[in-house]
Structures are given as C-alpha cells and as structure tokens.
Image 1 (tube, rainbow, N blue to C red):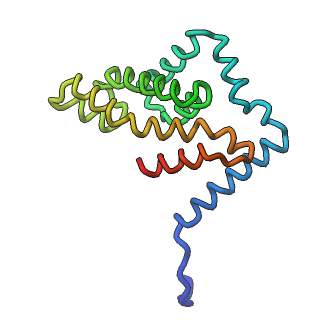
Image 2 (image 1 turned 90 degrees about the vertical axis):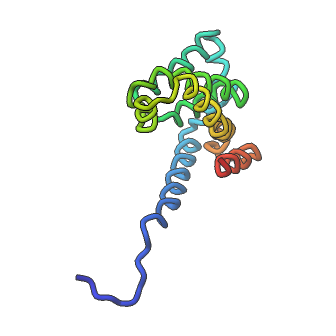
Image 3 (image 1 turned 120 degrees about the horizontal axis):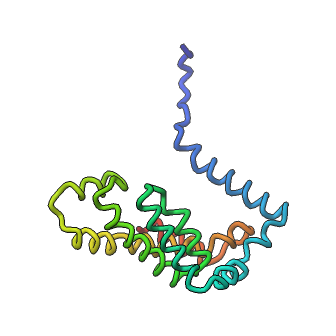
Length: 171
C-alpha cells in the first residue's frame, strides 16, 4: 500500500489527448521524413479513382453496405470517401451506402440499436427514413473534417480543418 502524501493522482483521461497528439505528431513526422506526402495528394488519388469510372463510387457505396453487415466502423470508410470524392460527393456516396446498409442490417445485430429496432414494431420504412435523417449531420461533419485531413498529415492546418473540427464538436 502506498503512503498518502496528499498528492492527487492524474486520472487516465488526462493522458488520452496527450497520447492522441503524440500519435498525430508521430504520423506527421513519419509522413514528412519518409516523403510519403507524395502519396497524400488528393488530386492524384482522385484521378486514380476517376480512372475506374462508375466502379469507383459503386465500390465505395458497396463498402459501406458491407461495413453495415459486418459490424465494421464507418469512420475509416467515411475518411476515405472524403479524400477520394471530396465534400459534396463524399457526403452523397457515404450517406447512400450507409442508408442502403441500414435495411439490410435491420434484422441482424449491426449494433445493439439496430438489433433492438429489428425486434420491435417500428416499420422498416420509418427506421430507414429516421436513420437517414439523423445520420446526415454527422456524415456531413465527418466528411468535411476528413476532406481536409491530408493537409494536416502534411503538417498544414487549414480553415477547412478548423471548420471540420467545429462541425464535429457541434454534432
């Protein structure tokens, strides 16, 4: 047993922002040191995806459907959508894929909420419509934030990044 010397121990949540900032700094350092920033050019990535024509957006939307069915987190997929398709089309494709995945996951335990709705009397149409409406604000915020993430990884803070952070915080 440790003696009580009157000091107050730091709570674990104090370290979480510090760990996040350290990891972010490490990622930025690695990207710049090893010149990975050449692979972080939005236009270059968008040209690659555009080369696939309609298969690019369709593949992205299907990845959202698969994520819904496999209980995968949507944030990394949304991040990719923002980078590859920009703010407007990123939101359109993300909300489309997520909304298509919702009714498919309705009878399955996508998460506890979907499972609970699958067991009660809410209609599938009401569930899909309300899910779309209430997912849209966070989708817009995450896509706006993510569309500016590559600049942050290159060590640049843009107004778009600041607006994205504010939108995420507000939602």
